[in-house]
Amino acid sequence: MVGCGEQETLRATCYSASDLEFPLHVDETFFLMTGKAARALGLAAVLSVAMSTAAKAQGGGITHVDTVPAPSLRHNLVGDPDRRAMTIYLPPSYSTAKHRRYPVVYLLHGFAADHRAFMKGAYQNLNVRISMDSLIQAGAVKEMIVVTPNAHDYFDGSFYVNSPVTGNWEDFIVHDLVGYVDRHYRTIPKRSARGITGHSMGGYGSLWVGMRHPETFSAIYLLSACCLTSGPAVGGATPASWKTVLGLHELADTKKAGFVPDIIYALGAVYDPDPSSPPFFMHFPYKLQGDSLVEVPAVAEKWNRSPLNMVPTYSKNLKRMAIAFDAGRQDAFKDIPVNVTRLDSMLTAMGIDHTAELYDGNHGTWIRRRLETKAFPFFSQHLH
Image 1 (tube, helix red, strand yellow):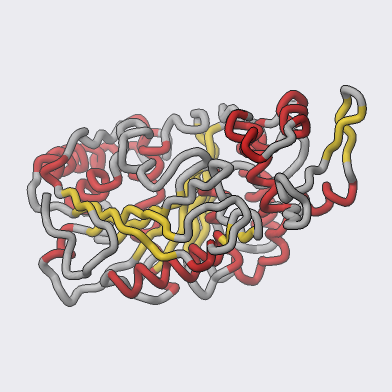
Image 2 (cartoon, rainbow, N blue to C red):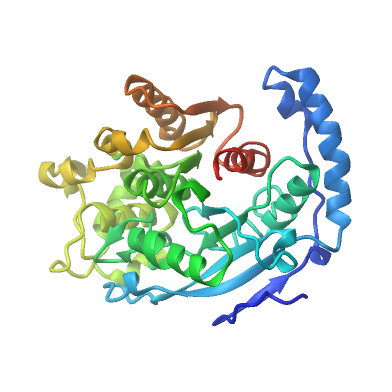
């Protein structure tokens, strides 16, 4: 355990490089997929040695667990707190280079996860601190701060969108969180030094928040972004899922509804919230007639305000940003690889520079690898 730095915090736990649990592994087969085998294999060899050395180092970065006041989340209708935990990775020189400032990557977690998702090994033993220390040691990325806020709410996920039901999560990210981090840590407080990324629901939030706030962020990377369009199969929904949602009568019953029904409730709070309609304070685009699902057109139109459908509205903003996104071809959420292709086509048609990739894998197969070899290097290149 080491000190958390010069700032006094509301709640803080720090971990040093001596707490390393898992060696970082770079698989040469990934580089072979890029079509630059000779150079990539050489890089893989360098990374393998350097990362092994970094994994044993005692002078790496630290992970700081902090609490952020969240006035944007006050008065939500489901009783969630207005103080939110976050993890923040501080790079190796942070504790010694007292006047140095750093770019920041905001890394958003997925549905039913929390701020520890990228630290506790859920993704192929991923620990952001270990990965970043190793990549920095190898010269693969420059020193950056990485922040993951806790967006786990009553419905298991906020989607990082403003809602009177669950709170103004977009405002929390853009104002409360970014403002807090800039005030309490040695950041470079400029859009050119901030990027936003995330996996699954975090990818949804990264696109939504990023394209709406080019004054705050300058780079976006989406990892297997889910739910970018609505429809009967959104979030993996089936007719049975919708019948479960439409068959419940008390807010507390949602706690037992299941993963996919919870996604539907979370999206309902985003797309058609209604504070005057208890107990769920939202409307759904389908209703039950006997044993059949029937669309409710007025509500379905509101649910169509999904991130992918709103991309043309924010085309000027997106032209100001560095953009990349990817997903696995075998993702069990069938809409995800389809939407990668759609987003690629839309941005191309609008003349917006970007990088898109589909790779062999499912929803979580290579998330650690994608962060280490794609997302973090992307931000290292584009954040100034």
